[in-house]
Length: 439
Image (tube, rainbow, N blue to C red):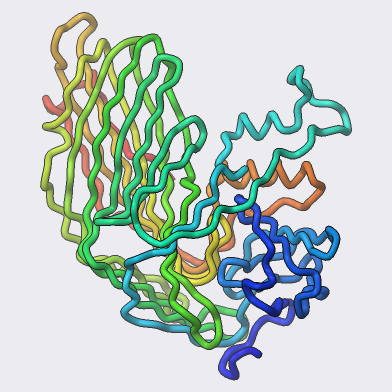
């Protein structure tokens, strides 16, 4: 029974039995196989909101019988799609000993080119009125405890993700004459989180999220090119680090950390190498507040250089070797399972632009350039990367299910925590002015 101090929206279906009613979940987190005899499972229908566990919350897109089971495909919701009235809060949430949820190789981690091929014949030509069968969708592996590195494969990259002395991701690409390896981290020490969320009449009236622990950024990379091609890729890492918070007013909640990497190379020659590393302190705490219709960031900035990125740049370029890496770390409090997130969020996006250039044939680099931009996005609701939404919707179209929306967010434009650029020698046109990723 719902807590007396909390009211769900009328179209929410609270499936009885909790996790015991779940037979399996596809790796992409979109389709849930439920016990068809679970209490209130028969009430599930397209347009309703399914609530079966803290990770099984979403707008029902499709329901199908399979023997004694129900196959329920869900899409994203906002927290106010689920809760009409209630005040949820908790303090001192220790971000440690997480539960690791892996999605394996979900459909939404495909490249858009791979998704386009789903609707093509073996000859590469689309048939009129006919689509290739949808790809196999394995079930999610069981969750495990700990913050150690988890290996994954995303869009031709080998990646690893961990949550030890921070949220860190590694990425490795070696294909068609192009090599790239790197690590990026949002570092922290013994972090804790506090949150407060008040909903009245289906609207958020107050929201606060604060994460303490002393934050920094760390980055290293190596790249090489021999008759290779430039790369542009978005890597949504299919791993969630989840901190269960128990129930608040009877609602199972968790703090979840997820990561994304964006890679863009700008190699102006057919051969060359570049490498570098740097580390910086960033802020003592991260967070925001919302009241009376107004958002405000609560970030105690403390940007200092610990290890110079520009002084570390080395390599053998023939022309210009440029690289832009953006590392996104997102903290969600609420219901969260991979791309389906509902609740409060704070995301730190750090972009590193590096350039190493030489005149054609010169034995030594004549310029180095670095641009670092750190932005915060925050609010209540969800946003899904455009390439991820595109791939999901291409899959849903194969099985005649309506597309999902890319965003359902209450929040302001991104807040700039830090932005700086440096070129050695100053004003050297060959290296240009490195710019962080936009948007």
